[in-house]
Length: 170
Image (cartoon, rainbow, N blue to C red; front, side):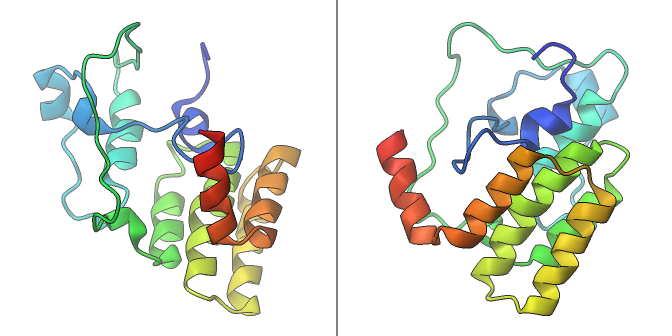
């Protein structure tokens, strides 16, 4: 939406599916000058695309625009090993905290429930670890009904059922 903060576009999901707000840097048309001014952070082990997009779009004069027609095709083969499949939710939480200058409090809360909580659940985190995440969600972010509903959905709907629902919805 016009004037929507990029972090809210990227992280504030409409539902339990992922991808409606995805930014894949490999399909962006970017001026070389911007790539030179805002290089990828090669020290990151995850979130490189998000990190670059947040920093690049904070650069003076940079903007995200969608073209009316597709200009590229992005294939995501099933079963491909991806950095995003890591369950290291603590790394993701630390990354998000370090990038708070680029992330609104509302987007922070969504990131906690969509990225950190899902990874913690995959890693079979204990109650103490889940408490840590919900504390960050409430105290450091700006929770709203939609982010709360999303978090509860991730807690109550098993991952296999969510994958099945994604397939039939799309």
